[in-house]
Length: 483
Image (cartoon, rainbow, N blue to C red; front, side, top):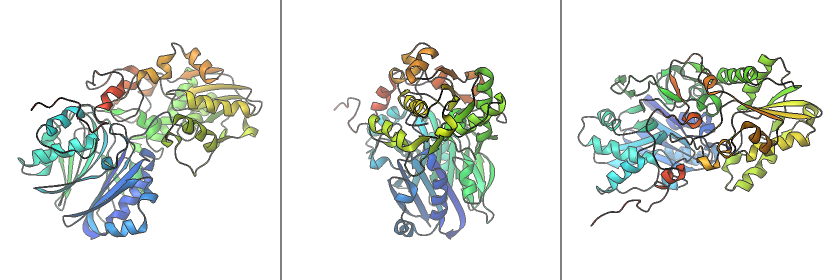
């Protein structure tokens, strides 16, 4: 899928019982999580209470050169982050981890998600003299922890208090002088898991694929609302905020997560194949070949082919040496990047009735260009099947789904009109009911508010969505300060 959705972020942390080159492990973990954010990245290392960090715009191997890795040096703890900006926009001060120096010591914070009450938190702290250097909601989380730390016995106690005030999605990793703390919002919107290496190092990561990269064994998912504290005393769990069933973003299974990850007990790859199988049952059509749009459409296409009995084929070859097209700064450049990135395999397409599987349609512009590639390759018919329902509502929890006036499913009142707009012979979306069955081994619930408009928590009343985000995207105050 290209330029339709912007991804979230990825977090990674390691705690060793000895001083070693922990930054190297974080580097590898972030490399595995690169799909979650390609705008910027950062690593912070703790060497006996002394923090060293490096952050920058770009991909992990570009930001962390050998000299930068040497600068990070050795330590027994480190955390890292890969980012795509949702709220906060592009700003060097928003690159994570955020490193805070306060009266109780050093603190580093990495965050995946989005707070719906971030503007209120920022206003609260600014009116009390806090100086914000960036525009991301992560800074509000950091200020909240520091504020409560002044009246708490420990950082984990401060985090426990802070979670009463945070509303929205957050999977966070916090590093202090002596502890690595991971915590997840009570609804569990974003994934977070715990692992352990053979030499006793503990790892926390957004996805299990990052554990595999550093040779760590998956222990378990961190529970919604749970605070996990890792120190020389071992691992401690605080479950004050646990109890809710959880509502993980269903799009983790459809698009965001890597297919080799296991989230909440369910294989991401198998979930995508189930999506394709459901599509074949809900929207059958006579055709000669089933193809997927790289990358997240491939597994769904395989599932569709197996369920329908229609042969699976390779319809596109992807150029692996350019970044994801949504990173291009303008819509025109993003659309031009489609042809550079994808090329149709004419021998598998020409003269055939083609079923094309993709994970979603947001605006429809790039989708139309991909369909055009198939037409130019000689496709006799093009039938599109989408492994998610239509986007009709914005997301406030870290997925950059656009405002409603820009969503193609809101612009047109029927699937047939959308099909005509993007140039396909027929179009079928996965039902909401089926999306809730994708993760067959998961006991949690799912957030599908971008499809249904029903959110697990109250969302801002401002519409369109960009009015809500505008409050954080500017340095100037959005409220009036009285003398």
